[in-house]
Image (tube, helix red, strand yellow):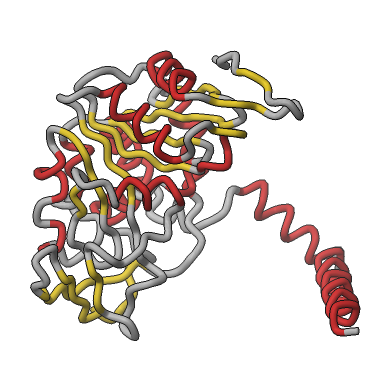
Length: 297
């Protein structure tokens, strides 16, 4: 499914709020839905009104009885060296749309220092409540766990499944062997009233997670629908059946997400064995060197 959208003077795609609302409804979103949104603002093409247009379209689509959530993660901003998370002031690292969303007066942000979520809507208070009481970022009691329990949706606007934070909740539940760093970090949160709350937390390891491997499985089971708005590919995933399928996958293969797709792994092995990999690395080094020398002169 692809919507017809206007073309700008230079031929670029122009997207307006109604385009987004029509695209979301055609994917199946309706009033009363609970939706966690991962996004890339630049993926749409030219978007009239910027991030606020996307946010307004989302809120109008689910209506007053629905709830929109966005990830406002601070994984690179809050750590053992910088252990304090300010729910009002600490910026997220998840893009322009979440940052504009969390600053709206009606938005509520959960108190977890590294994996907070901001929410607007009927269940915003419930979805964000007590996140800081979880020792792990994506527990059953986190917004991600609650989204699954309530049968919500995960929407990807111009981004793919590799940013699907809810899959970390399934990894935690399955107790996969690679997920957590050994040391518990002593972090804290400053709430809206300025109170500092100690939040000891276990951090997810900084490894490459291969969440894209779920896409063909979700499509095969009709758990995910896809479409397009402007230049952005959009994906809508039903959270509860996704969670059930993921748990089945991880029960059979606990390292499913920690290993690359077999075809990619075989290609890497081939490149290394034929010395093509080293040649590519050498040429990349030379390119960087010449660029540096050119800039230095």
